[in-house]
Image (cartoon, rainbow, N blue to C red; front, side, top):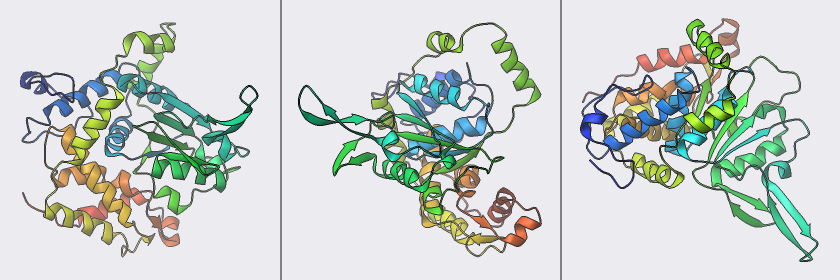
Length: 348
């Protein structure tokens, strides 16, 4: 079957074994099978250089095709930059990186007017944010005014300098990282900015087998930049990514599933272990990401399993534990898991 939006595929190819991070299969739709195939191709290309971290791969791709952004909690040295570069190469998109520091100014992100001596006029010089995949490394090391500059871009997909708006390229995905172990010289992200991230993903140390595979990969004395250029293939392009985003947004969500999402989000606001519950934006994130997961599975309809699969990454940064819960050693993930299990699941 050929689809003008995506690389050609046929039903026999699509029915092959899914990638390790592939959503569970149900009854599929012929229209959405190419998206399932594309997802598997992207995951396969990323796996050529980036080992493991299934939650990061699935969560980032879900956020990308849902029009969202991700906050990544991770210690240094786990390959986040390599992941973003590999993702950009696979999707044919531009990649940029900003190292956030205490003295980073908003203009260092957005760009600024510079005087053109030849033309005797000011012209806008774009900053590093004018890319498609932006890695905002250690975002919590910069003050609030710098966060605010990035916030507008994440929400509006544009930069305003001296009263003039400049559109950033689309698709546009921000992957912001923060180190959970260091607090000196850091600024807590305000709730308003945390709420702008569709997911908060955690990158843990690799397993023994995965770390052994990483060591073997680097023992070959082959430059990773060279491997990225030679081995990782672009399976799509920015224009097709935007078209797939539109298709994901068209996935059907039944009223019963909307009610299920609403019950989960509202339950966080009365949950005894939470001081602050999830905002309405959490429900929007759950609904759109469930649509995208359904499309990754080749379906034109979302199901409760789609919601459950991404509920914790979508809400863990939108809730706050009470002081008593923190003293008792509870975690937001554990409480959310218990909460979700207590919500009645709608039947097909």
